[in-house]
Length: 365
Image 1 (cartoon, rainbow, N blue to C red):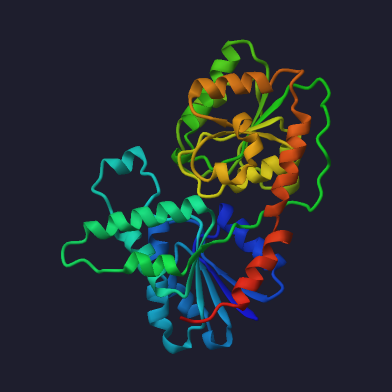
Image 2: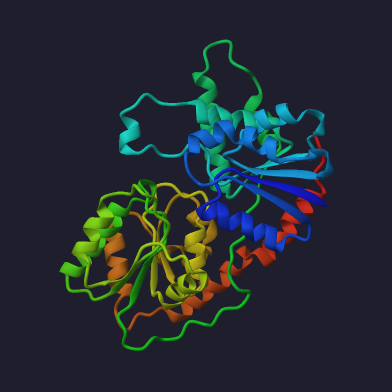
């Protein structure tokens, strides 16, 4: 088949996802993208931009778009030329937590309404986790209740009827070297998330400073994508943890990035927003032991046998578990190898055939 892939925000995990699918699908995929900035404008105008780039929409068998596309607008402009459509939700604007600055402004429901109308307009709606699907339905029902009477009826049920969970693929090799006890180098803590408020970096660095003051020795790689504006705590941490930091900032080389992951002892997340968690899955696949909050999408990604070891509820629990994992005698080699093997199911080699089959069997509604 010929598939048209529309990505209005081509950066970070969105870019990785798009490139992974293009590389591993057995179909002919044409990828159209826009730069990863001005996300509000992207949601409102990406359809206008893409319509000018597409020469013959009717020559495609499927249109696959991600959540920052206004698919109701796109289909209205395309008319009868539009083939069957899929909308993939990496995140949604109904449940995304507000920054401290945004909370001071009047709530903006426009972006959430674009998500609603887009989901209603397409033939199928795919979500990257069960957690995400559940929270989206909850927030949709809450949004409908805000609409002044008379309210439209049955909209959420219509969307849910054509929704399903399709885990994303991740870019890592089919085989990786098994974890072995390291030499006497200081154990490495990995932070490989976006430098954004929704990853709650203040809590992460607070625990690390506490570790340092208590005499626990470690090294630190602060990776992940950052933009021109990011939380001040990163600059503060660079000074407070200067002797521990061995990498600080986005690593553009994929090979170098994977090398840091392979050296890691522990990967930590303190996120308050995570609908899947590609960065965690990647780090675990390369041998890092995950320490994660018991919430969001994380419980469905980790094997239940490891939940007690992996998850924390409080800052103190994270401190205690990190302290234990950073001890020389506690490398958790067997557990890290077990978890790394479990992540293989999320490789593009495993996921791409699922995507291809679902797209092949998709019929227009």
